[in-house]
Length: 113
Image (cartoon, rainbow, N blue to C red; front, side, top):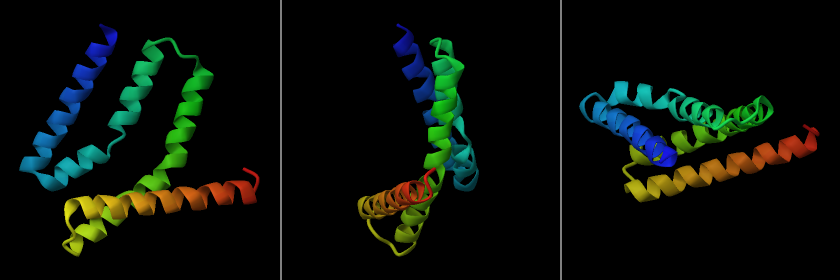
């Protein structure tokens, strides 16, 4: 039952942001860029009794993933600007994301982080 509640609340949040973006694209994008998913996930993890150390690891993963996510969004934006089909734009964004994650991983190994 708890899982159903999480799914319904999360889906309602996504639906609300999508509806806002349909009417006001710029503001919808700004709201979508807020750390809603991260904070919601953190709240669900805490409510499930996860220890602080695990929450910290989760947040570290979010921080590490941010630059690659920005690369993905820039890739999709540029692809759409050049009128690529939406799925090709997603593909371009995913390639940017993967390349950026690879570079990040290489840098972490190289600098022993």
